[in-house]
Image (cartoon, rainbow, N blue to C red; front, side, top):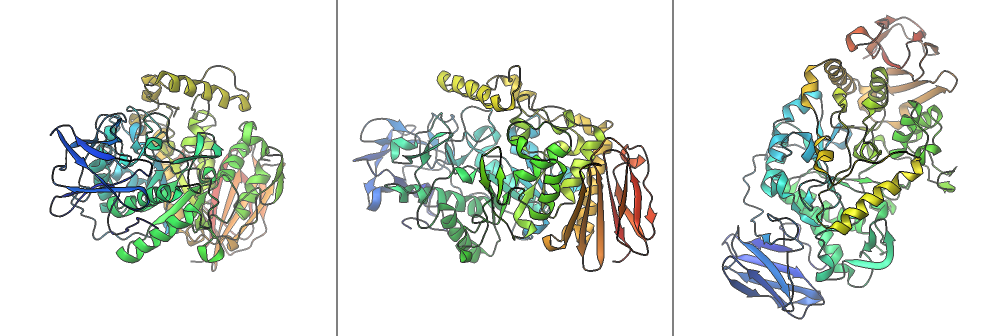
Amino acid sequence: MTNINTRKRTIGVNFAASGEAQVLLWAPDANQVELLIPGKDKTVSLTCKDLGYWIAQTTDLQSGDLYYFELDGKKQLPDPASLSQPDDVHGASRAIDINSFQWKDDSWQHFPLKDYIIYELHVGTFTPEGTFAAAEMKLDYLVDLGITAVEIMPVAQFPGNRNWGYDGVYPFCVQHSYGGLKGLQSMVDACHSKGLAVILDVVFNHVGPEGNHLEEFGPYFTEKYRTPWGNAINFDDAWCDGVRDFFIENAVMWFRDFHIDALRMDAVHAIKDFSPEHILQKIKQQVDILIQQTGRKHYLIVELDLNDTRFINPVSKAGYGMDAQWIDEFHHALRVTSGQEKTGYYSDFDGIRSLAKSYEDAYVYDGAFSEHRKKVFGMKTENSGEQFVVFSQNHDHVGNRMLGERTSQLVSFEMQKVLAGAVLVSPYLPLLFMGEEYGEKNPFQYFVSHTDPEIVEMVRKGRKKEFEAFHMDGEAPDPVLEETFERSKLNWELIEKEPHQTMLNYYKELIATRKSQPPLCVLNRKKVSVEHNTATQVIVLRRQHKVQDVICLMNFSAEMQEVEVSLYAASWRKLLGSSDLQWGGSQDMPAQVSGELALILPPESITLYSNQYE
């Protein structure tokens, strides 16, 4: 490593206790670097040190001042490690003392990953105001729901005020319109005060197209590999050390300076790195050093479109050491099982058979031939249940539908309850997408606020091409129009109306049941067994812990189905029945059953029973 200091931020502009600004910029091709302070008409020259790093120490730059870097007396550019961009991605950077926030979370005790019940939210559409401060006002609601971890979609500064966050161009800078650096720190502090962990979604596989000045400072990208977003980030080509340090420092910063508990790292399969030590492994090493220094636990969770355990195996077993991964395959199997279309990447999934396999094996494709990919795909996994995150919907699988329809628009009220139950009884970490808990009706559509006409047109054409594989007719909503963004905001008034209030109460009970029953909250994959019937569309999932069993009876069909479970106990008591009248269903399931479980399951229902042993 050339530059990593896990104890304090060194890259960009930082302030010593004396108030002196300490400046560090990586620009290996530059012959001259100056820092310009337009508000004071001041210029500070930087000195070149080893490996393309330029440094300066000055009292001319103070917290709150705007500044630019100027390379070789030419173009004025914002700081690639900027902490604040008040005038959008093309404007000057603002110097901020990252350590000036007064934290109140000294007593925060981060809990084990196995206890995560995740709620994914997009700051801009979670509330009418679309700010961190407004999101703070909803934290009591999330605690009451039973959530333990809030996952925030990317907040790195992007062009304009509307974006999913995956077009960020300043990885160290928190989106100004959301409330900036201090707004995020305040929200994290508030989450910790209420017992909520915070996961931040970060993007290390590409940088957005508009306002991306990284290449003007150095070889941040390489032509060796192509990605869906263009040239890959340079993690293993000439001058890659400076790039690797840049992103490692970024990961450490979120933990150290923002007190983030976990990072969700976007699409790591798109990271191209054939170094002896993969960039993810290097990030893990530095995070482990930070953990040793602070005593605070942090987790690394990856989005991964590869059924490859190398990513989540420990470094000691030649893995990259990531703590957990998203498994889209569980979602795909669940969607198809609920009767939704088998187009695009869903075509590979055989409904209830695939879902049953995912319950037992995590990966559906673990060495089998994938017709969609036209190759044998995946590998077997023995990894623990807490290393997998599952969901019935998330930002991608809602927002990447042409019209952005949520599950509430695609399946019945009863099936929504089944899908929720299917996720929360799994031996994995459950994730909810904002609004699903009360059956939000507004869509979550793709939106941007780019100002470059060429980029705007590329986005529109890209969206159209994306839906060709799904054979969809019609036109996607224009992602540039503000109304596309506005219609994607949650309608909080619904939680006071039916059937939304009943759905919300059902989710609360479901989450409470998962938390209170050891067979459900102990994520032991070795104590999971599954039976499925393709003719009746019924899954019987058995979860065990010590002498207690929980039997989850799922009927995905539109007809009543008879089921017999060859397990005997003196008595079985009902934990939850989605068809019960109190949850807006058509019939109450028996509160208690003696001996063998032999029942008639209502259509589109999930019922949970436990033996009487505690």
